[in-house]
Length: 150
Ligand code: ZN
Image (cartoon, rainbow, N blue to C red; front, side, top):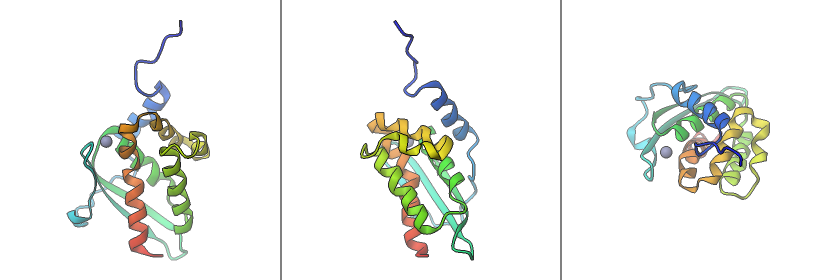
C-alpha cells in the first residue's frame, strides 16, 4: 500500500504555499488605502487590500497587497502579484478569468501550468472550503482594474 501524504496538498504544493505565506512577495503597508476598500473572505477571516499601478505604456508596472489571511489566501496574493507586472489590463482580465474557471472546476488545473509556481493553486480546487481563500486576491484584482478603468 502506498504511503499517503498526511497533508491536504502534496508536499511540493505545501512547500511553495508555505514559502509565499512566510515570505510574501509584494506585501507592503497599504494603510493609505481606506479600510472601506478592504476585500474580505468572511468564511475564513481573510482580508486584503490591493494596489495596482499602470505604467505609461499601458502595462502594469507594480502590484502590491496588504492584509491578514490564511496561508492559501496570502500565497495566492503573493503568487498573483508576482506575475502581474508587464501585463496589460486585458491580459490581466484573461489571467483572472482562467484562474477563476479553474478554481470553480470549469477548466482543468493543468491550465495553470504555464504560470510556474502559481500552478500549485490549482490543487485548491479539491478543497471547496478553501476556494474563496484562493480567489480573494483575484476578485480584488478584478475590482481594482474596474476602478482604474485603463
Ligand atoms: Zn483563508
